[in-house]
Length: 115
Image (cartoon, rainbow, N blue to C red; front, side, top):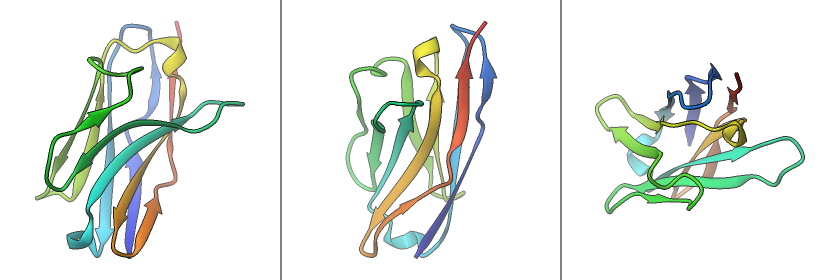
């Protein structure tokens, strides 16, 4: 099993940047894909980005060119760098790990984009 803890959320002005972290612990050697999702109030959860253990990252059209997913295997952590943030990016952001055991979600971190 894998446990995930997100951090880095907060309040930022439009046009600003934030970097979210997703720290993994447990049976991390089995992680095949790390993903980021977000959910705003009253809206279905939305896929944001994924990074496989091998291969290139993939992004939702809504964040392509503004967000970047990466990982540091030495720190067992995935990141989501978010630039040029917009009010519509306001949501709870959660990471997800996929492996032989199935899926694991983190608890989420709030991102609020407002002036």
